[in-house]
Length: 113
Image 1 (tube, rainbow, N blue to C red):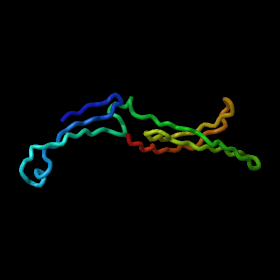
Image 2 (tube, rainbow, N blue to C red; image 1 turned 90 degrees about the vertical axis):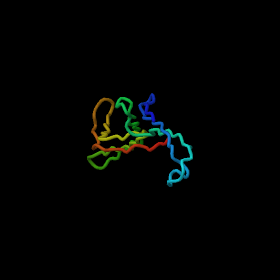
Image 3 (spheres, rainbow, N blue to C red; image 1 turned 30 degrees about the vertical axis):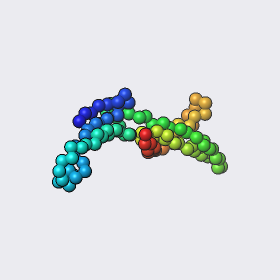
Image 4 (cartoon, rainbow, N blue to C red; image 1 turned 135 degrees about the vertical axis):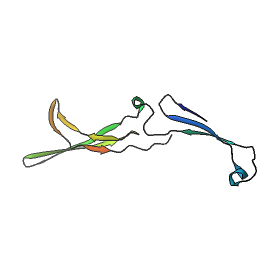
């Protein structure tokens, strides 16, 4: 058995299952084995600096006016394999702050490699 870490901080484990076939059910030893490599596909990495970062995209910015108020809304998409917590969308007119959204959390996109 051996454990290592790849360049992206994902854990890789190699091991042999030396009991296959009839051996599993208390049969005679077949002297056969399977080699297995287990690879981390997603989630936090062994080293925090290599963890995936949220990939947020803001689109569909819409304003609507009613009497003496204006409502601004936007769609925020998380295209990453990392969760994004307490995301606040800041609405600006040039460099002037118009307002901030309430904090939201966006789940990660599950991607299998």
